[in-house]
Image (cartoon, rainbow, N blue to C red; front, top):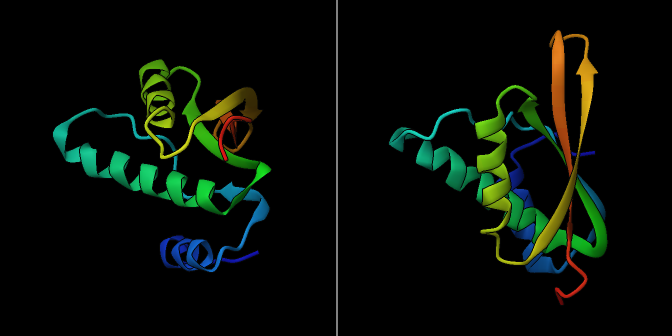
Length: 117
């Protein structure tokens, strides 16, 4: 378990060819805005996703939180970002009650498609 800035670590691991069974992202919730100021947030999330996919084994899994189930537009925007990654991915999502959030929250599992080499 590493608790540090993930961008330099993921870049280094990708350059070294290190591969992992699982990557767990607990950075932030999916952004809820589509305003121009938020473009950099989506770019940042795509950077993290791309780097994570580069260090993920072909049968590995990437786990991350989404956002509140009621923020359907934000979740749809996130899912659209998954289609913009350097490699094709598939995903599943699960909705669970998070008591400390006092609401239902969406969590994603993302993996590379079998066609990705």
